[in-house]
Length: 220
Ligand code: E4P
Image (cartoon, rainbow, N blue to C red; front, side, top):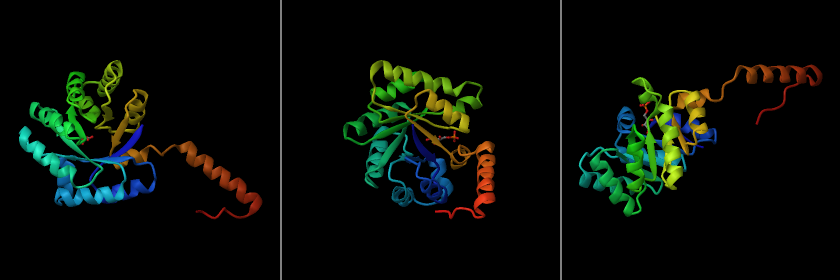
């Protein structure tokens, strides 16, 4: 499963990129607005940090305008994936942009039926939101399982990007469900490293080593 960072914060993206496990970045209008900079220059900077798919979302709501905006976003960098919402206009725009060879991530997906529509429109990625379904009392992960199964049944090439992941368990369950990509906040990626037995084990290894060799190995 590919790991994407779900943030527009450059410090977090730089920190994550240093780990060597970040395959891409997803942004949305809320995340870009939080950084307070024009989207073009901000997305360009993200593309300079991470060499992978970088999602940038349109803010128009009318298909023809989404198409114009999508074309403009796609010209920022070859790695930009245009994000369109799962509305009728968003799907029309997805269909047009996909036919032009522009890769589209269809976002705000909450049902398997919506995911089928996105795949039929030629979406490169579908983004089902797990956490936001959990928030309203559903089991968001069922959606990931359903979509991966349906896409498999029909050989759709659209990649399933498990979005709105809020915990390491969400990431693991998405991988078990066969999601192609998991996008997560920096904090969740950071938490994936942790286990008390790893810390305890390392402490013991270094203590044992030190008792015999009286020195700790030189890092890096
Ligand atoms: C993904 O592309 C979305 O921007 C994101 O995962 C939404 O997550 P949230 O529901 O935690 O805001």
